[in-house]
Image 1 (cartoon, rainbow over the protein chains, first blue to last red):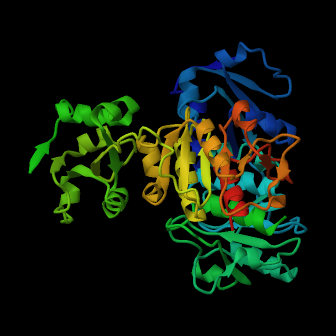
Image 2 (cartoon, chains in turn green, blue):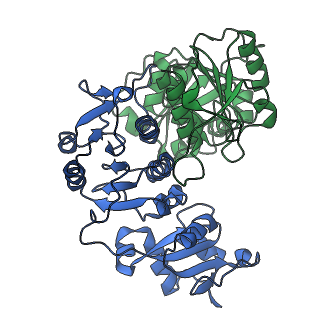
Image 3 (cartoon, rainbow over the protein chains, first blue to last red):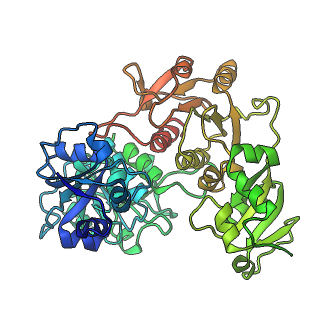
Length: 256
Length: 256
């Protein structure tokens, strides 16, 4: 088995660059960090090019026959390429899905979609994808300005749900138009006086729900294209809800 | 104005110790980090002993007359005593509330309570307190094993909601008994076959809701004391919901 111990190694430098969108695009790869994600990816038939594994993880004698290539790495290399403070010591280099000419082709529109407009926190994004999975949504659309699907911290916090539903990167205006073309309503979630209480809505079997930026909410342009704008009534003195909490309440409240 | 620049200063060493429960108890103080929390504490009439402020923050000429003492600190000191990576440069040393002989005295039981059983992540705890505030709950009880109320990361992620509702540290068994003595039901949230769907429950105007540990759920002992155990139906393939998301769905679903 090939062993790589040095941070100066040309491969290590390339792997480190997978933390950036540019690096992922140039190499057509992304990084999955930890056994849970790697195993979920294998189950989901994600194309894995190489497994990277530390001596300590090798000692537990995992079944490595399912990986086309395996490279042993030092703890130092593992710490260097990981976006987490205490990586487990196992990584998969996975093939970046090729970008469709039309990201809106082949969408399952029989169930609801969550649309993320300029959401910035990887933990919030991952939690929303995981919650959308649990709520039975068909997919999550990452709008322009939202952190990239394959950013390592986003991948980690999705905890495997990225393999359970459709994830696309798209201009949200185009997706809203597509949902409207199918006669499906699109709901916004901007706090404003004209918003409707979410419990008063009788949502159909499929719809779009847009969550906006943590500090600034949804873009005005997108808000203008929604059919209804929803609010969650706040009884106490909190100024707002965390965006992932609001998304959870709305997804489970609208789609039962 | 007194200035403290050195990490070797005896006061700086004491402030750093406010990150630990022992340090807070010994000094009867806790740390509030950032203007938002400091201002919310002032509004809530929290007893602030001293304001610590960097030169850069002083330059914005804030009104400091409301603080009994002000000390200028260097950026290095600010970075050292903060639990965040990029502190704003303003801190309040607040008086730790004296521990009641009976934490269950003077509780507002006219509205619901959230009970945290061995919850470990400061971000989850803070988000749940903020969500409980928004949902109109009366208070949050931090059970034995749950991270301390005044831990700096917990304080930060509560974002001011700590001043809007009652927060107590208590043995949860005692609080459950107290709720039962008032004829109020207590709901668990452990995934098990005997659980009831949360939407099938007609919750009264006040009740207790227990959320358990991120990995292990609620303690069996506490679960045995609940009136009903609730579950959120999972439609997709996610194995579970994040504890703060589940708490948000349950709090807003049960208390409308």
